[in-house]
Image (cartoon, rainbow, N blue to C red; front, side, top):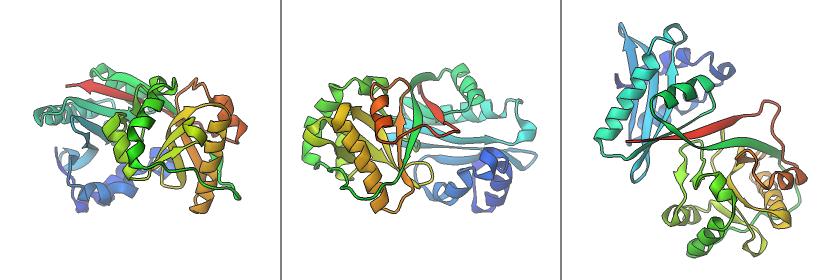
Length: 276
């Protein structure tokens, strides 16, 4: 393997051309990943030709995140992806990380990861609603409220369904006091009336929606909060709001009551950890 270079951009575009109907996000983030100072963005070669790529990056003190594995169609089922994954595991282990985490909705990839010792942590399905005019965005609590909000999350059954993870597609994080404090400082927490509902927000898929990445609460307080996300999306000129929700979330009826539904091409993914 070797680090990717700017000159590899066209080859990577060719490699992922068939993925996601030609809309693979890897081409959009190529330059960003190339410039990132943390982790590694690497290519696997056969006879001097790039046939696979992957990336890993640090996301928390002892956790690294593995993403972006792509293997050229002509060399799939030949062990290339497995070799790339094993090389990343050894790199991350050698640097002292305790966990390598990943997320995928691809059944074939999940089978590979589990065969290499990764264990499922949580699942999340995408729900969406269009933007809506006419209302006020939700309250953004201050960082000083971190301890109170963490207690509220820990008392809510939804947190266990998420296995105490914020399932960000850019790198699922463990939810603890330090992480919640960080989110509050960044303005990425929305709170319902009386503190009876809470949503963590973050970057979604392509940046076209405001995404709630962890949803806690139920009833009218949660419905009002989720409706406020649609108002905020409208104020920000986005297509709408989205939610990352574990299957069988206890508040599914509340989501439906304020206009959220799963897209026709529903997307669900799993988060897995490998203890190093």
